[in-house]
Amino acid sequence: MNAAAARVFRLSERPSNTPPSADNDLLIRNELIDPSKARVFKRAGYFLAIFWLSAGLALLSLGLVDALLRSALKPAKSLRVDAKAIAIARENMAANGSERGYWQEHEAARETQWQPYVYFRRKPYAGTLIHVDVNGFRVTVNPILSPDQRPVLHQGSVWLFGGSTVWGTGVSDAHTLASELAQLRSQQVLNFGETGYVSAQSQLAFMASLRCIDAARPDVAVFVDGVNDVYSALQSGIAGAPQNESNRQAEFNVTRSAAAFTAAMLERLEGIRLLMQRLNGTNPEPSVEVLATQVALNYLAVIAQTRAIAAAQGVPVLFVWQPSIFDKAQPTDEERGVIGSSLMRHRDLQLATTRALRILLQKEPAADVLVLDQLFDTNEGSIFIDFAHTGPAGNALLAGRLAQELQKLPISANRAIGPDQGCRDRPILPGLDVNNPNG
Image (tube, rainbow, N blue to C red):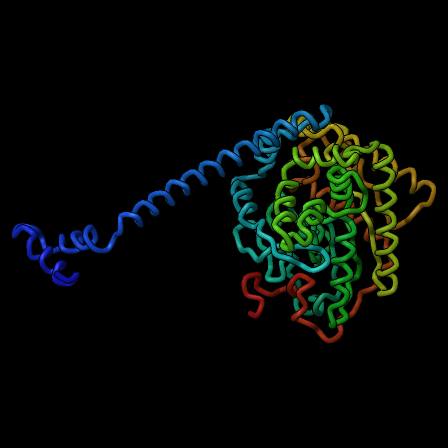
């Protein structure tokens, strides 16, 4: 009997009460699945289960090793930040009921995209308290000007550069430093600030904004920097690098080999990184005083370059060394909680850098550099929500001081020529709908 006849015979022999669908089951059992193949599938499933179990155990072991290395190699004086203390301060800084949803929006608005030279900028976002325009800049609530008062393009404006304090972490659009300054001066202020930017990135953002072909220039450019310069030095142990630069160094050319990719991923683990530093003989924590002086010198070098660029473009400038929570003479209970739970080395480095900067400026005074570490000394209320970011009250006070200083500058209105509405290196044009730049 040939194979086809045998198949028909087997099907004809099935009981009369067998449902038609069982034909397929009989075919599978008798014809389609070879017993040897079934064993192969079973064995493959077994090995797959073993693989995933082994991978899970390996990741768990790696996490435990990293935790042990962090505990053993991290200096005892470098306490970890207590997130609970900061959360309490942030909650207490919510000025009123309308601000209560801020941190949910803040998390949603944190998504960034690659930006040449400065590394990154926010993606557009439209919430209730936070708006980021189509070019990736935080929206400023500028004063409503009559048609005869309204400047042409960016004419008659202040350009404000800096890190997350300038961007407005912790406050709604209406209470960013840019918005507070705009209301005080009845003048358009453009917010170029971005989270994590050090002074060199502020400089690069300024240079990019000047390359737009419309030739528009601000009446004055203000740079509020300092805390990110210190924090990046705290991270890397060197002055002048952007924050998290070690990640970019580790990831450089990682796609060229599996070994490079694996090494880059391992270096993201703090314990592994500390071990590699120890094995390579590098010192992750140089002297606070030496590092502080290097940070101050680097900051002054950056602003000297920025000053020269601005002078060539006919733009007056003001450089502001921003205050931190460690500078405050009379911190509130919430602020003391943040200070007490911060890295002691961070506090020491911030204070030492400000001292070094003051000493350097005493030797070579600069009229356009303003050191504001003592700005909140007489204020007894809550100003800070963490080591750097100020709430609405702090931004209002800082804006007030900036407005006073700007009054002293010999400012003449700049004129815009040939408006370039396609330039993506500046906030969108004043007066445009933040959600619809074309309308």
